[in-house]
Amino acid sequence: MIEAKFYKKLNGNVRCLLCRHRCVISEGKRGICGVRENRGGKLYSLVYGKLIAYHVDPIEKKPLFHFLPGTYSYSIATVGCNFSCLHCQNWEISQLPKGDKHIPGKEISPEDVVEEAKLTNCRSISYTYTEPTIFYEFAFDVAKLAHKENIKNVFVTNGYINDEPLEEISKYLDAANIDLKGFNRDFYRKVCGADLDEVLDSIKLYKKLGIWIEITTLIIPKYNDNEDELREIAEFIKNELGKDVPWHVTRFHPDYKLTDVSPTPVETLRRARDIGYDVGLRYVYEGNVFEGENTYCYNCKELLIERRGFDVLKYNIKDGRCPKCGSKIAGIWK
Image 1 (cartoon, rainbow, N blue to C red):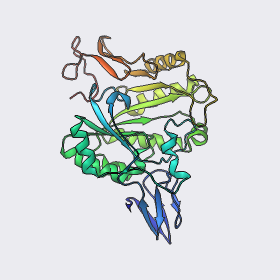
Image 2 (image 1 turned 135 degrees about the vertical axis):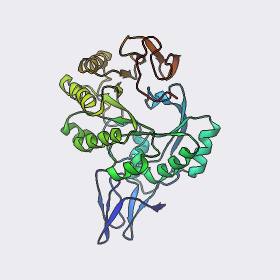
Image 3 (image 1 turned 90 degrees about the horizontal axis):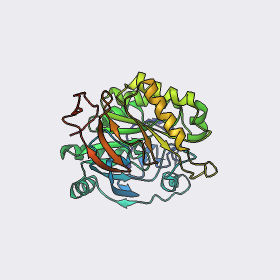
Image 4 (image 1 turned 45 degrees about the vertical axis):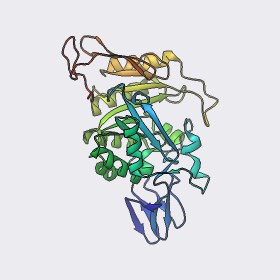
């Protein structure tokens, strides 16, 4: 347990300024994330160095398709999350501390994480599975050390971090896959427990800070699969982030509190992908269906990267360009 960054004292209470909930927390209580607690008028992180998950993953699993394809990423997480998504696939660990005072996890130092990444030949460290913002202090210390070792750092995130913390870690953060879960304020409030406009502001700041970003939308039947809404997401990406930012439209599988909802029809993903291209995005990918995952040159349609699941079967980008027509392909390739 260490004192948290980014909070303000309020006559015994504290206001956490790490994420965009900006929780006011009274003595002995925790914020929405379940892992930041007011003790004696000071805010503490309860998850520093307490990893609930640590694995070697293909970078494609994040998913990142334009960031060091075919490499591996050492992936870590603590318990806790500042969202309460009804469809969370990792709810056993993300929601655990909200009903349990005990904080589980393997004690590990930032130095140990970086050493494990080196020993497993990982080109990056991903802060993932749960929301990395809520274990910010640990992620920051790991990222700083990884940066010195020329190991890249990746956030897989819901995009709810406040401006100042993101600006502070941005010097060490190389890439992020950010969930844009829908484009409807009611959906965000009722299904995710968050505010859409705050997410959009955060995503724009990631881009402004020069962090490589890719956007993921998990399409849930009858919740966020409206074609007009999908078009709004595609237009936001193109107009606010740029047509080179990849968009992953991903298949939903029943889980947690949405077990009564059917998996997303493949046809819905194909239509979403068509919408993205119609709007003018250059790279749109289908997820969780093992198709629609290849990267093509936006100009001449040459096959550049062939994928099957998380495996890269063919890689044909030369110095960041299409070898056939010479067009520059956006991404981080080396």
